[in-house]
Image 1 (cartoon, rainbow, N blue to C red):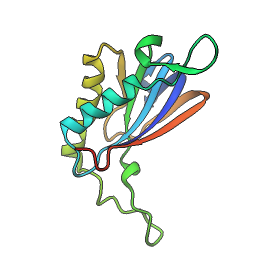
Image 2: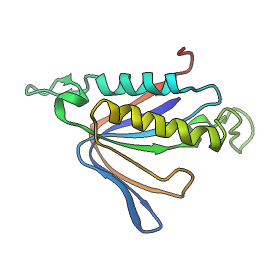
Image 3: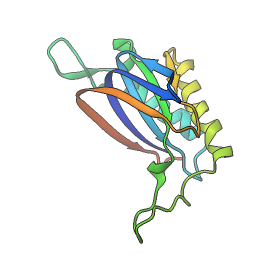
Image 4: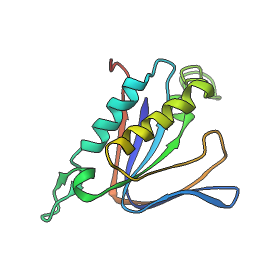
Length: 149
């Protein structure tokens, strides 16, 4: 899995003019599922992200986790994170999981966060989405589980 994780003040997803997911302060996660990804990998990524100490403490240092600050999560599927741009001018998506495999793993990732007690909103898998967010800091991390077992 590959995840672009942005610490946000707020974020939302709009599909055909309708807000389908919205959060306050927390993480906006653009999540790409690869062909080799599993539920175990999705759970491990949820654990890693939920425990990263990247929220500010009283002195302004990154020292607090999502749990400590009451963070919310917005999870949005993003197939383009597995694009191969090494040849030609058009991306290849052969490294991305097919939709029938990716959709359940995106939901498993979101459910893994919910099981940890977090409020989680999602986009709509496969839809054309408008994602709006206010990146706090700005703070953005790219996480990849390539090679995780």
